[in-house]
Structures are given as structure tokens and as C-alpha cells.
Picture 1: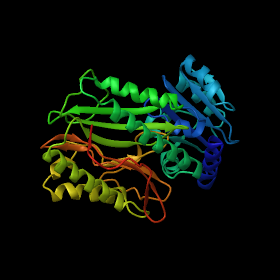
Picture 2: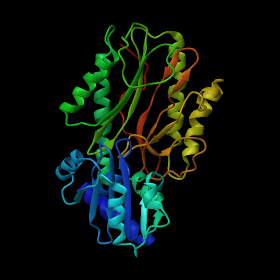
Picture 3: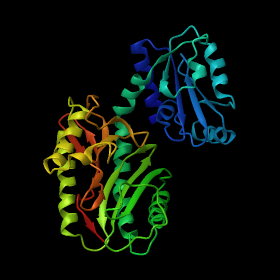
Picture 4: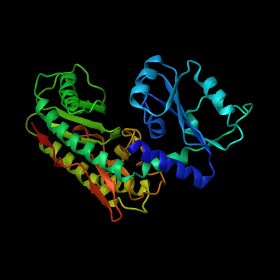
Length: 363
């Protein structure tokens, strides 16, 4: 049902702008555009979907394995194996060359399809699809609520798993097993453990958890393809006064960011609200790109989608957007700390979808 609702909404958006056909690209890292149109998230190689003027969808993939999987997971669309995927898609577009055709994201499209010598011309349809990806349908929001609940439950498993002597990958394995037993086969997760020597999170390693470690994680499970995220920090043992003071800054920053979320503000306003807290405590250098990437980001069919919460992003926030607000960065006294909740933008502000307490856990 969600796939049909998305496709109907997409066709309405295309009609309102005069676009008659749409081409979308996806790969294993970012497939939200592809999934929105074809209801298929690619795991290997490249995928390009073409929505024709009559609303039918054809999916081109360059992996035989992906053909078999797409035929099972995306019934109702035509699937074609195309080892030379750009040439196959070009031949398909030649048949509708007299129509207005848009491409998204146009920066990912093979150059062969953008060549001025083609019979067809591809317009930039990225902003059109971005709007649909950012502002969610009611059914999409319901899936995200369920994913946020699963993230809370997964963090409880992570806390139980974090005992001295265990390796990082063992913690991750416990969480993955928990999610898969509940039908969630897609979870993006990174973590960190240690002290002042830890500057970020990463995929799990063989490093053993030790007493006194700060243990951070970012869990992002998906329900029906929609990702919700939670970020939390714990201490193995008893937190020091320095760790408690530092964590207080992160909590104040996250709560300031969430308080700033409402329709009509910009992503920059939210980022500034978070960063101003760090600046107030003389930690302004640690909200620059020297130490941190973003202060949050959109969530949906991809783990890290638009809008990106940064002070130079002017995207206007609208009701129906779902994002995580997370002032994750390095602290000079204690090391890398994280704290973040998934929030739904409502007409009056923000509804927090995560229920895990905002505290520095001691395990």
C-alpha cells in the first residue's frame, strides 16, 4: 500500500510541474530515490528505474542476483537485467524522447545519459523528489514510529551487551540478532569505546570493552524500509564528574535543538540552537567540521537524508518531516559523546519519537 501511495503522490507532483516521465538512480549506499519509485532497495551494483508517462515502472539492474530479488520483492514492475545499464536505459528513453523527462538525483546519473548528443533531454528533478522524500505521508510516519520504538528496544539490548571484556563486534551481533528476530533485516549501526583517544564512531572492531570506557552508538533500524535513529552514550562503571559535566552540555544542546524545531524555521536555525550551547561553554571549536559532520539530518528511506542540520543549510522545515537532532562531537575533557532522538515535525513543533531517557547511562 505504501508503494502505491508514494507512486500516486509522485505522479501528482510530476503533473503539477509538467514532468511526464522520471528516471531515478540508486546504489547500495543510497537507494532512497530508487525505492520511492520502484519499492526496491538495491544491495549490489547499480539500479535505475524509469517511470513512463502512463505511470508504469521499469527497473534496470546490472546484477543477475538483484534481478531475482527484485522480481520477488517488487511485484508489479518490469525488471530488466542490463550489464550495460546506461545504454539499456538510453534505449528505453529514446522511445519517449518527445516527452519532458526529469532525473533524480541528477548528480548520480551516468554521464552517458546526460550527454547532449542523446535524443532525449534529462531535466533536474532532484528537488521534486527531495520534497516527497522529506515530507512524509501518514503511512510513512507510522512506519517511522514503529522503527523508533524498535530503536529504543535495540538500545536496551546494547546496554545489556556492554560488559567488560567483550569485543565491539559482539555487542553489534547481539543487537543485529535482536532486530532480525523481529523482522528487521536492515539496520545501520556504528559505535565507539574508550576515552579521550576516541574522536568518532565507526563500524565495530575487535577492541575489547574496558571498565571506565565511554561507549557510544548510533542505532538506525528500518521498518518497511523507513529508518529511525537513536544516539546514546554510556559509561562502563561509574561516570566521573568530568563525564557528567560534559554530558550535561550535550543534553542541553540537543534539547535546545529540538525546542527550535517547528514549521517555518530553517535547518540552519536548528543547528545554530545546538551550536550556541557549545559556544556558551567555550566549546565552539568542537561544532566545526574539524570535529563533527552534522548536527542532525533527515530520516526516511535512507539513514542520512535531507535536510542536513548545519548552519549553512537554508532548507525550510515543514510539518511531516522526520529527522534526528544529535549534537554528536568530541569533548576535549572526556572524548567523543553522542546524544540524539528522532523527532516528527508537527504543526506546533516537534514530537519526540524516541522514549529512551536522555541520561549518561552507567552499566
